[in-house]
View 1 (tube, rainbow, N blue to C red):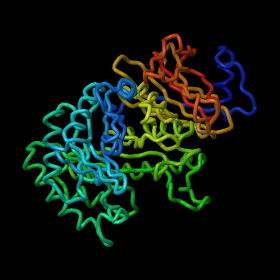
View 2 (tube, rainbow, N blue to C red; view 1 turned 45 degrees about the vertical axis):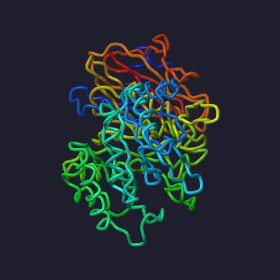
View 3 (tube, rainbow, N blue to C red; view 1 turned 90 degrees about the vertical axis):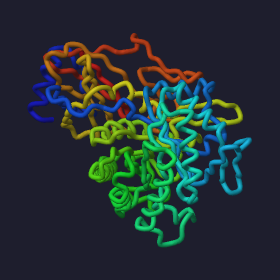
View 4 (cartoon, rainbow, N blue to C red; view 1 turned 60 degrees about the vertical axis):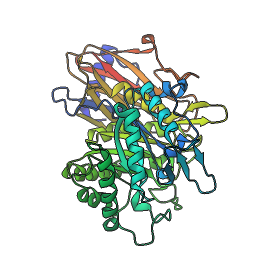
Length: 477
């Protein structure tokens, strides 16, 4: 411990702010600069991405109160209708019923599921990033689908996303070996021309690329400059296809929490945001999650995923993205924040969902610069809202040691309260709470004010402990 840290702690002991600091605890200094607020967090930053064939099951109905509540808990979000199933979904306006061919995976959708989707969106007050099939080379159908969606739900449309992961078309047998961005661009341009001709003024997004080491995304947005308004790409922190346990990309709890994993992902966000902005587009991380290929049981469905996600959400908004969408296949044991039992029409939330609740609670207003001085794997983020409240988010990613953090803030802030994100253990799949509150069976979540724990603030200092594998929001007024 540094001499300065020792002096601060002695002062705090004198003030009665610290009861004890055991030899096993790790001290940390967290410095918040409230004088230079930065970027404003977009109100609709948070989102969920669903496979398009979820329309077939169906989930999105104006009377599905539980799923509506689960979305409304998160504020004004963005629902992405996308995934690989975009390219396996065919529009047929007059289809009498929604059909799913389980053998081929092809789904046929008509007006009815679109009516349901936009009724659901009106009930949640969310917008839609609506995916359109590109791989089938049927832009007239895509143009008709977009026209109908605009007719019934224009106020709920953020944009239409043209295609899904064209840089992986070869892997899915949608194109022959050798297919590249130079071949993709004229296809995308031709489809966009048809879609725009039928829908003047339509807002389009893309190229919805999967993460690769090449520069497909950068080349695609440059080639589609003036034709797309939102650049979108996808990211998974770890690889579900990795077979090497020694690889830093192998899906383990430890690898997910590594600072190097976060740094690598944020580098991609920076590169894609810069390329999109150079092409005159906003940038959205339209599909992301912890582990690719549906997630990894024991990693993606545990409380560790919530710790990773809390840090990732604030980090991505700090790096200038306009929004994110957690991918959700609605299956338990996966990376989904929400899973469903279709036969019973019931829904269950998983640890990741609680990180989204925390972000909605604390991700208000403008970002504040933060610094952390500690040997612990501790991260901090802070915001300043319109009323002058400062919210400090602390995430202890250390799986075994408690951290005692001294938070340095402005002297004008005199009182504090804390809400904790916690679970029985790092690998827990159940028993997760935020602000000591669980989501109810009807999908609602609303903690009482009495559940906010008071924290003493003296001379701009607040001291708070974080057990191993935990997070919290410290609100200062």
